[in-house]
Length: 401
Image (tube, rainbow, N blue to C red):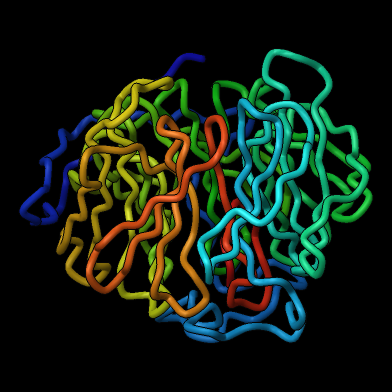
C-alpha cells in the first residue's frame, strides 16, 4: 500500500520525564474509502446503536471499578485461566492459594482467554499458526471446564460489538476481521483491512462507533467504522516498530499504543486519528491494563525486542498516571522475566501477567510492586482473571465497561 506524507505541526509537546519529542511527519493512508478518520460531530455525539449508556464521561471504566461485579457473574469460580501456546492447553490457577488446580487440552496454539460480551462464557482463541484448523474453545466460568470446540479460521484474538450483537474474530494472518454470531460463532460477514499486517489488538471509542486496531507487522494502526463496517484509514506510527496492545484513556480522548520495538507507549488522538506523543516505559512494551479506579495504566514490558525472546529478560511493569501522562512507578522483576498479557483482579490489588518466555505467571501487588511467581507450562500468553467487574466485555483478556 502506498502511504502519503502529511505534515502536521505539533501544537504542543507533552512533557514527561520519559517523553520522546516526535517529528512532524505523519502518514495517513485512506483505504478504499474517501473519508477522513474523524467522525462527524453528530455521529460522535451518538453512541453505537444498542450499546449500554456511558455512565461517566470522565471515566469510561467507572462501571468496572473495584468489586463492581455484575449479577451475570454470580457463582463464577474465582480462577485465573492461562492459555499455553506451545502446550496446546489451558492451566487453571486458584488466585487465593496461587496453586494450579487443573489443566485441560484445547486447540492448536491457544493465544488469549476472551470473556464474552454477556459474561457467560470464556473463549479460548486457538489460531493454529500457519495451519488451517483454528478453533474457539468455550469455558463455562461456573465450573471452570471446557466445552466442545468450534472450528473458526485463524482466531488470533476476539472482540465484540458494543451492543453484543456480534463477535469480531481477528484473523491476523489474513488481514481480516470476521463478524460472527456471538454464541454459535457462525460467520456473518468479513471486512478486509489491507495494509494492516499482523492485525491483532484493539480498543473502542467511548461512544463505541469506531475501534482502532494495531497492525504489528506494518508499524501502523487501522481505524474501523463499526456502524458502517468500513476502514476509515491507516496511520503509520512515526518512530514505531511493532505495536501490540492498545487501550483508551478514561476520558476517551487518547489511545495508548504499546510498541515492543519502540520500548514505550505512543499517544493517539482518536477523533483526529493523529499521533500526539510518546512515553518511554521499558524494554519490549506489550500489555496495557487500567487500574480499577481508572487513574493509572499498568504497562507490561516483556523484556525483549524479539518475537521469541530468551529467559530472564529485562521485564518490568511501568505505571503511567493518566492525569499527568508520566511514569510514576516502575516495578522490575527480580532476576528478570517476560511479562506479557493478563489483567487486574476484581479488588484491584493484584496485576496478573503471563511470563511468556519464562513459562511462569507473575502476580504483582499493585500497592508495593512486589511480585510472586507461579510455574506453568510452555509459553503462557493472554491470561484472564475471572470474574472481573463490569457490565459487559468488549473482548481480549477483559476490556470491561
